[in-house]
Length: 230
Image (cartoon, rainbow, N blue to C red; front, side):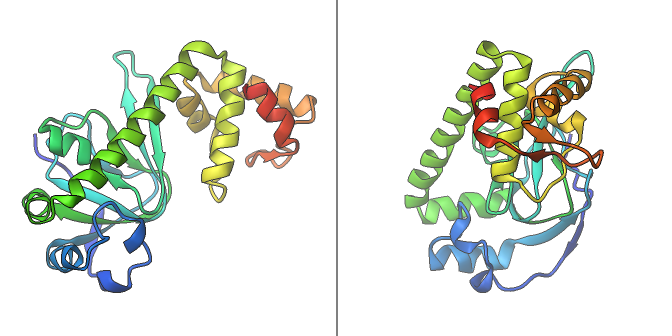
């Protein structure tokens, strides 16, 4: 099955002036930037649109210029789980591309996003011409693996309340601009929306958070919430 990109494509400012240039996995060397300038396509996705689907073959690598993207897997019984959340400067699809296997998870725009897409052939040419990037990629993958291991251990060792407290802290620290739904928090914490709703009500009674406007969640006592997470 080929990769499906539902977003619109367009021209964008030069890579030389891109604000994410020095945050990107690929764009650190001037020669690489020149190669990317010729090959990249700018794509825009609305909130909720799928960037690529689990099971599809990777055709290249996406880098996030703005917005937030989640990697999501769906179990056999239809439950969705968020594996990772990524913001500007992050790269999508490189693990599957270099492993030469289909995507394990779907990438979905959490809010309106702008991404650069670089085709597989050009990515491979870049790494052949600049083998030093392999060390940068290895470091990046190693950090991803550590984060995945830590999240897996949390799922094993912590109860739902602790995971929800940890999710609130993580989301505020990394994606403060975003209002997260109870379902999205549940998908990140590995629980159900009903459990999230009950737990948030308990947190509010304890004075840890405020959700009086019905949607946004304001952390009142970060230290106490961190104690609950630990």
